[in-house]
Length: 507
Image (cartoon, rainbow, N blue to C red; front, side):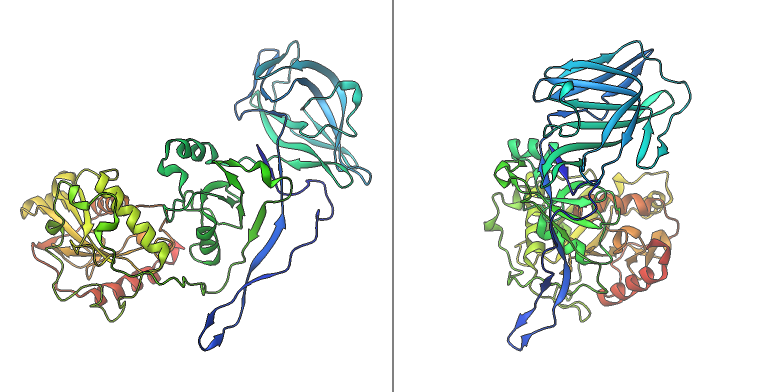
């Protein structure tokens, strides 16, 4: 399956842009100012008759070997070297003329095509301009279903043209284009490879979590991030990510996101009924501040009866993890971050986290995680325990904890409305650390993973606990005593904000 975003040689867009879209906030007091979120563009979804796997090109002595996945019988042509004549006014499809030898082989089904008795140079070969509108390539491959004598001016839909250079006696693909009929004839569309579709298809078949958005863990994946091409989000989470100037990064590779592309899927594959030109690209411009908020009235109280499995099925009781939380500090006990109804996306993600904990899917050795409220009526405050037995006894933190016979480091995770797009807030409850010891300041943790710049929305709370354990194990300092910290939540949060502001190098 090829996903393409416009002709590679088209001087003008295939269609005109659609009207600008806006977010409008409607309330009892009226309609607030609108905010632009980007444009929609028509894209093409084409099915190439032939594809070459990522490792499908190699050189064996004097033989060029190509692995081909073919949906129809056809021919493979190799030009070594070949001159690409770029598209002109009468055609958007480039043509190739042989400057050296031209080889032709039949292709049937999935097979290996061997071009023998061709010796490539031992030195690296790159593409070179050889005249106006012309470029010489060390090797060009054309795979198509029509006969050779039909010519190249009007190739059959699905024809694949691959341009290669030679590096260290290995063939490296520089670009691939697929022919597809446009208003004025064949158009060359660049082949775009994206990552995650295969895993999504397999997970849909097996009803696995890999088919779900990595942020909300609830909705199916249907959105591609550009330019990294990770297929990992639902469209709603993609829009939220795109509108946030700080969090506008891929949750998997952390590269900046410039576009989001929604694919029409059916049973985990590109929807054939969508036809050509029915997919949409949502291009959201970065804005000074995030003003798009959830309007869903989802209560914070979510009883455990709504879960398929009760969290009581976990071996350790929830009450064990909430002893260190001060009795006067519930989720509503902070003036800085008063309790409010959690947005729907946040609740969906937290419910998925609870289900995973109940099934034991995300349990990590030496890490305990649960709601502070055993009844499940408050989903904002979570208790995290990092057991001393899981901390390396050779590191300074491990030595300090064992010196005072402290069994675990107890932390509180507080969930803001922005979660999971934004990071949770974490403070240390027990033991009491000397200021600055093991990255702890006024109970707040000075860790990049807890900042807007370093946080990944794909990280689960259990995995966050593992990351915190690894980070503080590399720190230095002194554990003062085995007691609950006297620093309030508000002070810890203010300190964490100052720490983040002081680390401009994390941006």
